Length: 175
Length: 99
Image 1 (cartoon, rainbow over the protein chains, first blue to last red):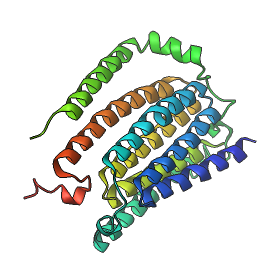
Image 2: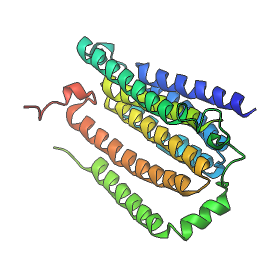
Image 3: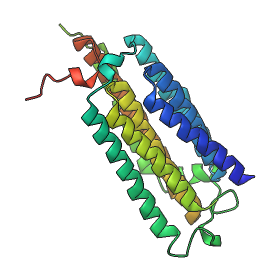
């Protein structure tokens, strides 16, 4: 069951991400990104992290992406193929760079896991719902409010600063 | 599922995010591609947390989310400000400071 779910989510995530990059209309790009984020939440559930999955959907799909859609519609951005097309050389270079990066990372992961014999088919390289400690809400809360209390408070101050900064930037009158 | 599968999936998503930053000209879509890269790294964190049987990776994901939310709020406010000044968010046209 787990492999079926994994590959379903994987195909959905990669296809939505590609569609996000390729679509000309920014509103469609945002909606495809939301689809990608939902499938990533599925991976988090498969990886024994239900609380992370829930927070991921609430924060990303529920808050961040709504903000994106809000701004896109506020600015009334129309699709603009003529300006969006760009130079051929730049597109070729960008695509080549991405392909090289992908090959590089895949080669590294393959060298680390498939050739050294401690992964691929080995028991110890399996991750999933049976392995490790559960990321349930009590466990996460205990870690967050004891060991990681100081970073937690610093993060709250960071959010306050960002909120003030966003209000100041968006309200300022330009003349 | 083997750990390597999650890592390769994360690498593919990260590369797609890089492609979006390099190929798109719309600043808001570039911004969304950066979010995609952050999320690809989050998958890596959670996969390694499951692999090592510790919560540290999952805790780190929360802090990545906090920073991402702050970054999006400030960044989109900047986009609105730039749009008010220049009436565009296409990065090719925001070349006032280019030498």
